[in-house]
Length: 84
Image 1 (tube, rainbow, N blue to C red):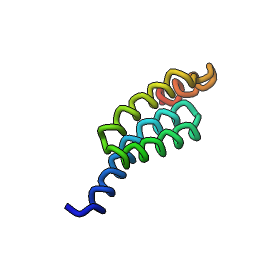
Image 2: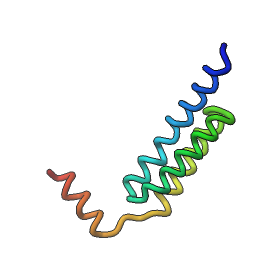
Image 3: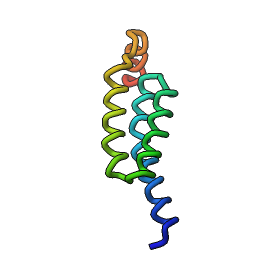
């Protein structure tokens, strides 16, 4: 297999894993933190592929969901949108 194909595959694996922290950060309205998480996952994907990118993605996503809380007004607006 060509080396460039392995590198592209590893970067795509890191990108796919990086979507988790990005989506988690969008729901918590802290997009910059999610973009950093995505870049970290892409770098981890480059280094060890899914073997490193997936655990980092899970850890970073759970950290975002645990650390960044929605305000009461945000919770009400989400509830109102889900009822429509």
